[in-house]
Image (cartoon, rainbow, N blue to C red):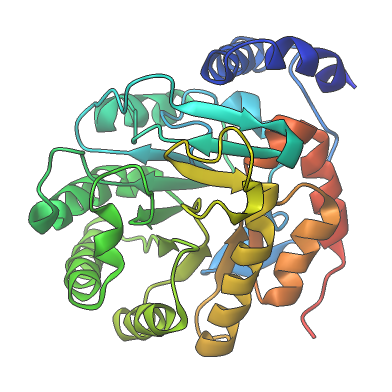
Length: 341
């Protein structure tokens, strides 16, 4: 109800200004009687990656890049929260404007470019949060790190966030960092995952705790590329795959004035393709590696469709912009009694 009242005011602002205002408000209200709460009854917890999730619906990375609003977001009823993407060093991201609403299609275009305060800021925020639930930390590379040295950035991030994360997501699929998606290719992917798994094994020994690794992939991959990724996931024993990030395709908003804005498209137009990728991964992986479905979820039925396609968990982000916190409750309710066929 409150979001329905606030939305016209937020939509009257520039998209990034509204985003920043929302996060600062959530941070300020966290723990107070005025903090947004959806009253989600978790029910039917599920185990994925060896982790017990209170429900199947999580927050996707990108909304809270610096982990500054974990406690404010916790009241929404998520079964898990993923923060980031974080890079080793702080970076401003791409020039503004870089975030655009496409309300006619319930979509968002962003070319943020991994804007974040770096590892020190994110870790300080995580340590100060009261949240005790499942926390994913999404890691990436700095924009000015040469692609041939990208693994160094990912290993640096993994080493630093490992003690604080329930799981860590390796983001190689944002379209807004030059050449980043090149890491989804065979040799580059194999080298990256090999170094990360070596680092993970050492960290597990050091901390006496195994923190799973998930790989986040793009929707703009053909069947051959997905086969290569699935083979790499199996070979390196990656703990989960997140499908998908935003798309560079514009079929879903063809003819719209914002059609030619560069950046990743998310929201409604991504639903069909991201769900197709989930289904293709499920066919190829045959239950060996769990899938987290994300992309275009605007209602409870969309979330359940991801599960029907083969996902074990789902994540939402853009749908929150259009539906508000009620979307979390709707998705949790739709997924509560789901059972694999």
